[in-house]
Amino acid sequence: MTRELGGALWRGFAAVVREAPERDAIVCGERAITFRQLHTLALRAAGQLATSGLGPGDRCLLWVGNSAEAAAAMLACWQIGAIVALVNDEAPATHFEHAIRLIKPSLAIVESQNFQRACQCEGPPVIELPDWKALPIDTDAPRNVIHDNEPASIFFTSGSTGMPKGVVQSHSNLVRGCRMVAEALELRKTDRILCPIPWSFDYGYGQFLSTILLGLTQVLPVARNPFSLCEAIDRHRPTVFAGLPSIFALLIRGLSPIRTTDLSSLRLVTNTGGKISPAIFQELLQLFGHCEISLNYGMTETYRGAGLPTHLASKFPESVGFAYPGVSISVLGPDGEEAPPGQLGEIVHRGTGVFLGYWADPVSTAAVLRPDPLWRHEGVSAPLVVFSGDMGWKDEQGLLYIKGRRDRLIKSMGVRVSPDEIEAVIRGNKIVQDVAIVGVDHEIIGEMVAAAVVLKEGSDSKSAVGTLKAYARDCMSNFMQPRLYIVIDAIPLTPNGKPDYRAVKTLFK
Picture 1 (cartoon, rainbow, N blue to C red):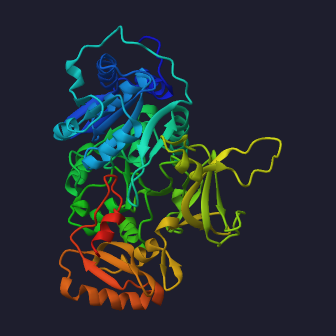
Picture 2 (cartoon, rainbow, N blue to C red; picture 1 turned 120 degrees about the vertical axis):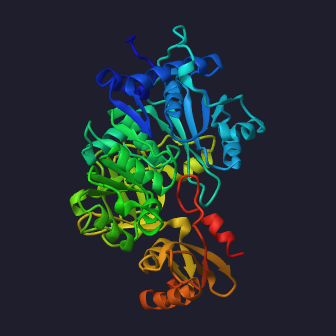
Picture 3 (cartoon, rainbow, N blue to C red; picture 1 turned 45 degrees about the horizontal axis):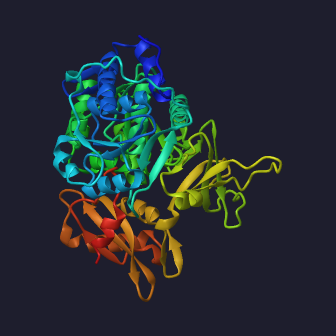
């Protein structure tokens, strides 16, 4: 194999290929791609993309799902020195158009079902995601040296409360973050990661990086539903299950074969993207009692920040644990100083994972990426830290707890309440499969707490609202209780699998 250039992500992948060329990299249904085969696909893709005019520093926008072809396209970009930007294949065309306007890509690669729509957009040349193996390897393709602190990827925030912003991470940050998490979770070279999460979501992206940088096999369900997920567990025997609260809720309380699926191959279940409600967490423990449970916290802007040691999961299920090695997390009170234990404040992340900024958005960047207010050394400029916008607190042991987003807090009857906290309480009722809480403007009380509820199959929808109102009166203070309820079939989700609260709000208009 020739000397590998490109950025740190490509070089890390090439090292994995040299170490374990015949190990499965990606398995999905009946198809399995080894690391050697994925490397060859990436080289073929690099030649095609270079011929299409993609070069170092150019942005390549991918409107794709998880697949070996998409993986090869991303790796090809990094071999060339281009910057990857991902939009989920199930995202609306408006997200794709917004990404074009924001990052001005030189090339777009899209899935076949989106090709015609993408071609109608004013922007770069568009190619349909090819079967790279049909293309030759261009031995004369340019091979570039990329500085490890240059941008590697642009990831879009979930867009649940506003238009997505483009979060820029460097090669070196992604490599360090991936290895930091792997060490904390004690991942093994023999692990097989089940990833039902889009790679366009930062947590799914983390699983992809664990494959290409650590050599862990990635198991992909053939479709995005609980039946395909359970089939992937049965067929491919993964050892690690990377999930989200919405996925666990659907598996446990929705129509799912999870209780008849052989889960014995799994040894580790991980969660991020929000807190699992206590009621669902107890059912999770019953299903996956033989597994270690890892509860994590992070943002697109920070890669990953904290994790709860697995042996503490059943004792402190409300916590996301301690900062990972290489990361320091502070909770700042209203005065800008470190908040004492138990006091609510804004979570600030410093160290490994701090992003480079929002692409072409210096105002938003300056609001989030600021000099460390706790820096003590006047002779040296303070490093930049991430003001997360997440509210939380630490207990006397230093365990971190997340209250919710600062911009999601509802001011009901003059009191600020956390929608996440209300959701957790309502999910404790056995008739509820899922719930989303929003604030609805009200001329007298400011904001009215409103609940969009998905019922478990077989529950009586006619009596549900009365049942939940009585339940809320017993469990919540007056200003936390929802005043409006609607029963819906499913919570609207962003393409990244998070509740789409903007869409939920429109249900109450």
